[in-house]
Length: 71
Image (tube, rainbow, N blue to C red; front, top):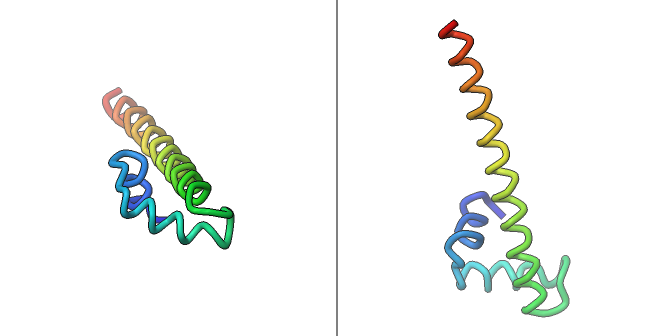
């Protein structure tokens, strides 16, 4: 799942994409469509959470660099 797809699932609740990812999840980590949807939504939340943490870390580093350059 790409970051864009994860964002569309987690933040926009894209039902078509959720259904597509649910079908893809069935052979790997789900037994039926509802559990596939839950797996897709969980993966999307995990990916968006990791991206948000990464962005927060980059912004913190940039704030530190800016502060060091100013002093």
